[in-house]
Amino acid sequence: MATRSLFLLPGDGIGPEAMAEVRKIIAYMNEKEAAGFATDEGLVGGSAYDAHGQAISDADMDKAMAADAVLFGAVGGPKWDAVPYEVRPEAGLLRLRKDMELFANLRPAICYPALANSSSLKKDVIEGLDILIVRELTGGVYFGEPKEIIDLGNGQKRGIDTQVYDTYEIERISAVAFELARTRRNEVCSMEKRNVMKSGVLWNEVVTATHKARFSDVKLSHMLADAGGMQLVRWPKQFDVIVTDNLFGDMLSDIAAMLTGSLGMLPSASLGAPDAKTGKRKALYEPVHGSAPDIAGQGIANPIAMIASFAMCLRYSFNMVAEADRLEAAIATVLDKGLRTGDIMSDGCQKVSTVEMGDAILAAYAG
Ligand code: NAD
Image (cartoon, protein in one colour):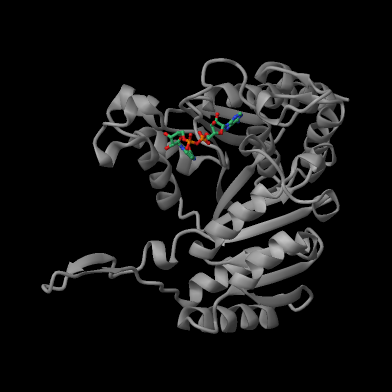
C-alpha cells in the first residue's frame, strides 16, 4: 500500500472545524479504499503562537517540508491582533510559502449548477463555468527592490515599488499553466500589460518562447490584463487556464472567484518546483477564506472550501484524478439536494451545520 504523507495545519478560528470534515474523508479513504494516507498534525498561526511564541515552530516547518502535501486551514483572529509583527498569525503562512518556494498559486472558479442563481452575474454567463487562474506568487511588484518610501526633502515623499521578473520565473509559471491546461481543455490565456510595462513585454516574450519550445500542442492566447478583467465579467466561459503575474493575479483571481459564490466555497493550491530526484512538487492546499472569528466555534462554517482544497490535493499531489472527480461531484450532489450552510443559504433549501454538510458530502462520495 502506497504511503502518502499529509501534514495537517488546521490553524485558528473555523480552520479546525473545517479540517475535521476533511479528516473524516481521509479516514474513510484509508479504511475503504486503501488510500494509504499517513497524516501528522501541527500548529500554525495564533494557536502556534500560544504554544511556542512563534507563528509556526521549526519542528512543524520541517514536517511541512518533508510531507508530500500540506493541508492548511486558516489563521488569525482578534485574540492575536496585538502580538509582535514578526510572530503575527499570517507570518506562519508566509514562512510556509517562502520556505517551500511555492511560486504557483492555483485558484479555480467553478460554478456549481445549484448555485448558478446566487451569482451577481446572469445565470447563462456563469452556468457551467470552470476556469483556473494560475498566479505567480513569489515575484513581481510585491517583492521587487527597491521597495520604500523616501523623503524628497521638499515636503513631498515618494513611494516606490518595483515590478521585476527574470526569465526563469516566467518560464516556470507558464510551464505550470501549460501542464495544467493539458489536463483540462488545453487552452492558456496569458495576461500582462506589455503596452505600458517592460516586465509585460518580457512576460509576453518568455511565455511565447516557452510555448513554442515545449508546449506547442496547447492553444495559447495573450490578453492585456485590464481587458482580461473586463472579459472575466463579460463572458468568463471563454477561458480555460489564465496565467498572470503576482499583482494582476491577485486581482483577477478575486474577480474570478466572486463570479461563483461565497468565500466558504473557494479552494486554492500553491505549488513549488518539481524535486530533482522524485519529480514531486512541494504543495500546500488551503481554502481562500480566513479564520472567520465571527462564526468560529458555532459549528456553522461552510467546510466546502476546505474539502474542495483536499480534492485539489488528490488531483495535483497524488494524481488521484478519479477520487478528486468523485469528491467534487459529491459536493455538487449535496448542493443539488438543497443542503446549505448559512453563508450560501437560499429560500427553499435546508440549513445544515458544518458537521452535517461534511457528513452529507462523505455519504455522497461513498455512494
Ligand atoms: P474571513 O474570510 O475570515 O471572513 C470574511 C467573512 O466571510 C466573515 O463574515 C466570515 O464569517 C465569512 N466566512 C469566511 N469563511 C467562511 C466559511 N467557510 N463559512 C461561512 N462563512 C465564512 O476574512 P476576515 O474576516 O477579513 O478575516 C478574519 C481573520 O482571518 C483575520 O485575522 C484575517 O487576518 C484572517 N485571514 C486569514 C487568511 C488565511 O488564513 N489564509 C485569509 C484571510 C484572512
